[in-house]
Image (cartoon, rainbow, N blue to C red; front, side):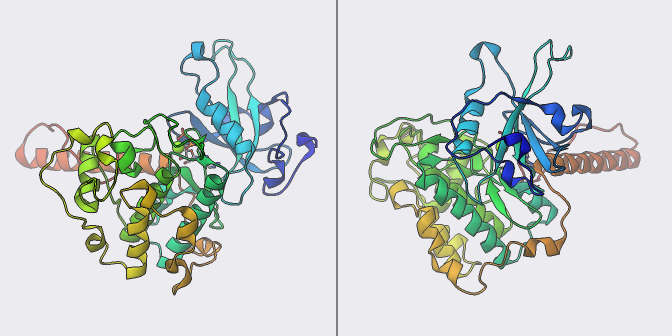
Length: 391
Ligand code: ADP
Ligand code: MG
């Protein structure tokens, strides 16, 4: 198949053909118009993301620039993994990788070109959308998002892939409400047959990091993603993050003070995890999670308690969660298209965060000017904000 001739109104047909292991030469990024016309929509750990239009098909696309931090290490492993894993996947709840393109070598880039991963464009990410919607989604919409998140995860786990960075900013959503897992930069395959295989511990954004990783585990599995899914669904239902830790110690405290202190009885083998001995033996927290979720219906809290089980083997799988009664009782998950009715403007974390920070800075400036004027003083140092969002 000639990728160059593939076209569609929504871009899906330009996705990388499954099981195609050929190494294509890279097309140039000028096919997406001049880079100066691209709008930035994202900036993560591994690169900036831009919105542009395919000049041949008119499709909107997202181009993720691969950040070359250290030339000596060559092409970043995170980008290689992301491309390799996404090429092998085809599911409606997984982002479509269209192609990889290169820019001309320019003087500004010291004679080096850049490489971009091209994806179908997604109007929102869940973090940005939660901000725009003021966390105010009806339960049937939360169920609709949760179902799609778990379906995407179930597909990955069936193919022995763990995502390892489940969080709102990595869940991409179309204006028609289709949710897709994005950002496979930290993902990797896992080996079911070798429970002793060791992986890096430094994965998953703090607030969504499961207890086994917080305690330093290097032997772990896809359960790490199911914890993150539990945190996201709880966040959508409670309208605030479940475990917004300031640092790793505070994160452990937030998790264990709600889910109960880890013990050999509740979690066999936990005492041999590297950081277990650093935990304060007192106080021993009881499991208060169900009590904390008491404002939700009992079916929702039952599912969340199972997704947020401390002991990874006891944690509910994505597949089992999809079968949970919560998805099969009223209000049933709505159709994804329902999202369009709310008419939310395109929302990405990068933009909503910038707007929020600007608003905060303006508010602070106004307050400082007001109080300085009242007291006849010069403006003093800014106060810390109480905003629950991570800076
Ligand atoms: P990083 O690894 O740097 O976090 P991501 O793939 O998560 O990179 O992209 C960063 C941000 O860019 C995302 O949180 C999202 O807001 C935006 N983004 C990523 N992919 C797309 C896409 N296909 N369409 C629209 N926006 C996207
Ligand atoms: Mg990301």
